[in-house]
Amino acid sequence: MSRRLLDKARRRLAAESGDRANPWGGRLAVALVYPNTYHHAMSNLGFLTVYHLLNRRDDVLCERFFLPDPEDLKEHRNTGYPLFSLESGRFLDEFDLIAFSLSFENDYLHLPMIFELGRLPWRADARDERLPLLLAGGVCAFLNPEPLADVMDLFAVGEAEPILPSLLETLQANTGKRAELLIRLAQQPGLYVPSLYEATYDESGQFSGPRPLADIPARVERQYLSDLNQSPSLSFVLTPETEFGEMFLSEISRGCSRGCRFCAAGYIYLPSRERSFETLREQIDTGLCHRARVGLVGAAVSDHPDAPALQRHILERGGEVSVSSLRLDALRQQEIEDLVASGHKTVAIAPEAGSQRMRDLINKGIDREQILEAAHRLAEAGMINLKLYFLIGLPGETDEDIEAIIALSDEIRLIWREAGRLRGRLGTLTLSVNPFIPKPFTPFQWAGMAPEKTLRKAIKTLRGAVARMPNTEVIFESLKSAVLQAFLSRADRRAAEVIRLLAQGGSLKSAGREQGLDPEEVVTRERNPQEVFPWEIIDNRVRREYLLQEYHRALQCDLTPRCTPGCVRCGVCGRPSESV
Image (cartoon, rainbow, N blue to C red; front, side, top):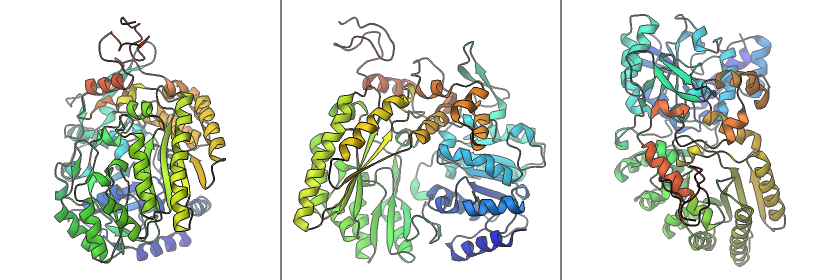
């Protein structure tokens, strides 16, 4: 036993307010695991919502597990004390179901440590019926579950609200063997049991499709909650020990209808849905009883038709408002003034690209004038700092497109500088630059990630240019982290052992080589239009033909062998143009 670890857990629990776990005794016991630290987990609305959905049932109890903080990991190692739940201090193998909430692919590298501390074998086929079933949910589970297909017993494909009821009822009614239970689970909408599908490969070693091994659906259809008003998603547990400790979060919408071709959230959460003003007003009033600041959460908060009214309601109740995202072409003057009145000193907008050609390629739907107009309005309203999000390494990107990022940023910097001089305070312009990562179920799933050499060249150019811009800074995502994310987003089930080796300190290249995989080929190779993707075990409700059509449109090609006039060779089909 480690008294220090247990005392820290008790202090954390005592500092929380809101939902509590149901007591033990006669209930299905669910361990909810977030593969990162408490600080990160308690900032995640999806994690908090599942905790609430489980504990509001009288026949279920749910307790939380987290990746230990660095200093706590040393204590676990020194004492040999296993991972334990925050609520009761019980161990993972004392629960009926272990549910992992997966929001970020790079968190996969924390899983082997959690398995070790939780005394769980890594591979599903090494665990017997004495151990709980392992389920993975969250956005990664219905984006591409295959890298963890040999690890997890089942995946929740889609949103928790429609999946949980039948899952829990089936588990509670189970009296047979695990093999029989898994078949019954696989026959339910939204549940994927990877052991009941055989992954097949062609002669070249490329994935060629899953084959069902039982009387179960050939593909698993993603589930979604049709009416968000039926189920809230908000800060069900409040704690000071998180990034949003001083804020009450409320999800106002889910999904996005904009159709940016690189954005997975815009496709895997379709159809886009919104909560009504009446529903949100009630939630916000509750939140203001606990926190002075309310955070409105959504993929495109500005697109909600009642966003200005919601912000005004918060201010009229004496609160302050924060938003998770701003769509620069949907900014309303009142919204900007409300943010400034709430004490916001920094706001972020996403031009994504510097040139109009690249913005059109990704279907961003904005032009230079709209970007500059948004900058003007934010600056004149008194916003102190501005962050700009850009992508590099997009398909077809040239040196001129990188120079266009610099030119656009400098134009915005001059607008910001002039406004700062008038108010007597110069703010900071920050460029947040991230490599493009081709994601499943987007039109760009056929594209490859740009080679590291190309990305390093772009980073060097941008860093040098920004260094010459006063009151401007640039931050870059780690290339190593981005490449790893791309690999885990696109790999098949052979990646399970790669993850385990990476967690032990191996490099991606060496770990891939040991498992017969070439990570560079997985990450950078452009896919053939007819190629079967590992993640297509999932039916995402968006037609593959539509996505491919959008990819051709992005590259100024259509679905026929003929390319558009002026195109020498189609970047997708490889056929020479008949129009030249």
